[in-house]
Image (cartoon, rainbow, N blue to C red; front, side, top):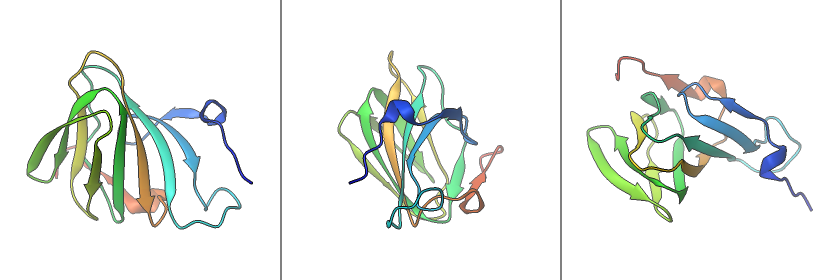
Length: 123
């Protein structure tokens, strides 16, 4: 049995400018999974930098409200919403609420630095 507590995961500022805690990543731990799982937080009035991943990604919103941008689309997201982000899609999320926007990120295959590109100019 493998149990990991969120409070024990180091919080840092990710490349997209979000607050992130990496929960599971098979490249960093001896676990037999193909995906990675992270907790992410964006403060009110802030947004992540546009970025894209070579792999697919899923967000599960656990707290707050925001606007999700994927390529040329944008949609309101809120608690209990699940968002699928296809590989190579330009994405970012904006916290439009008054509380922290918190969500889980699942990347499959697992996230590595080489699979992510930060797009400071939005392209």
